[in-house]
Amino acid sequence: MTEQQPQEPYGDPQYESYSEGMPTEPSPVVPSSVVPTSPIPASSMSQPTESVPTISMPTESIPATGASDLTGASRQRQAPQPHTPYGFSSATRPPASGPYAPGPFPTPEARATQGSYEAPDPWSRTPNGASSSASSPFTTGQTNRQAHPPYQPYPMPSYQQYHPMQPPRKTGIGAGGITAIVAAVIVIPALLFIAVTAGLMTVAKNHISQGANEPTNSYGNASPSDPNQADPEPTATVYRMDERPGYESMVTYVTDKLDHYKDEILNNNTMFMSEYRIPDTQDGTDYMTGYMAALLGTVNEAKAAADETSEDPDALDAKIDSYRTTVDTLEARFKKGQALGVSMTVTGNDGKKYTVDGSKSITLRPTWDELEQRVAKASNSLGSGNAASAQKLVELADMKLSWDIDEGFRRCPAFAGTDDGDNKALTKSETFGFYCPATPNVIYGNRSMPDWNMTYAPAAGVRHELSHHAIHMRCGTIEPEAVMQNGVNRTEGVTNSYAVKYMGANRALIQQSIDYAASTGHKQYRMDAFTDRAAERIHSGQCNAG
Image (tube, rainbow, N blue to C red; front, top):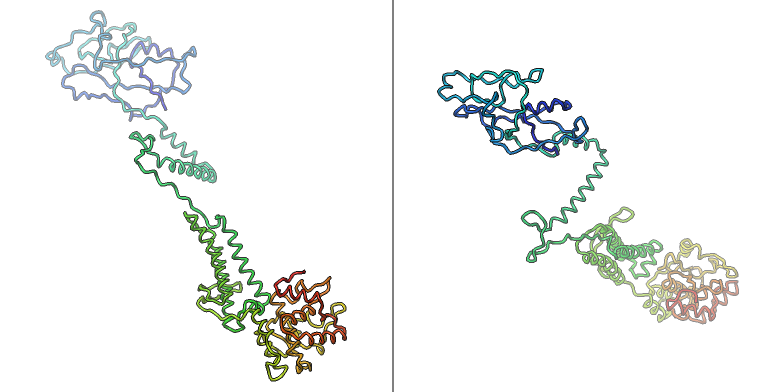
């Protein structure tokens, strides 16, 4: 900001003589638009009493460090004194007598006869410092006054200088300063400018947010809150679904549920249908597919809801719980064959679209316990012959009898013709029947064996093969850990014990076949206390080693 300095008296010989001893400073350029003019035009004066010429007010640029005189001391300026406009005060009135006393003022009549008024020459100085004329910046109104002879400079008494009214000087940053600032901003690197702007915007936003709710008084200053005025509404907090405490565990839960059933189906689709009692029909297959599609759709929806937001955290938590509830409800309905209650179209991993018709239900197959009891209580004479009766028993277990034993060997090569130490595998010609875990709903029979025409077929042989299926249903495998004795696989012996204890097999006929097999080098079929205990544990669902 530029400090306004007091004005120097203009045309004062005393001041001029003082100025001659001062260092010469360049005259500042004062724009014409700010040169003050006389506040009272001459044309507006009714009488030419005393003329006040236009006074140009020279200014002086003062460096920020201050101007010094020849001795280095700072020059002090006199503050402007009160003045009396348009005339002399009692302290500055010209002398009444002497060589410098003005002559008598003429009357108006005398003025009329004296001719036109001629303005005096401006103040000038001769090389010797004397005034070249008697003219003064202040005239008396006489037009015929003779010039005084040269005289030595007479120090005029101090007078009250007239200061015409000037427009207020502008303060602050001028146009040049603003231009410089704008130019400086332009050369700021773009990234820095963006970073600074972002930071300022954040600060400004926070400041505005903090001050927006502060009450102010009539001067715009913050004032204490009015107790009768309602508090401003606080800014609502927004919550994200995936930031809620139970979201991650929920996603894991529903995903594991889907993976569990998917792995079972991929491992053995037929066994899956047997385990969950899905009828081996087209309706049963469609129902199973719909269940898996509903699980997949629920998992996808739960994962897609990760970025969902709400101001109500309880609403988000309730939705998280709903996904758990949905998969649990679907599972419970599936195990009962009930309508799933959801309808959707899902795109599987294979790119195919699967439509879920949640309105359809199915009649589930009986549980294995029920089927097992049916077989155990059934007669050995259900058909027109032993082979036919044996086939009826297989059907009571909700299974099928196939006479293509070679197909069984192809489907389960690991369980056919493999020796296990002293336990030689049966050859095809020695094999009565065969159970393949890959086709759990099928019993394969070797129709070329004469035993199918004997009581042995329904009373012992078929019940032994059905017991393989029973162990598979209860343990998920035909060779659970419970069948291992000191590293020896006792699967065939445990199966015989299970057939006698829980499938209604004739113990005597089973023992007869065991003895025959042992005589030909197949000792794996024998029963003993270990096989009986293992069968009991498996029947109760304890499939691990005992």
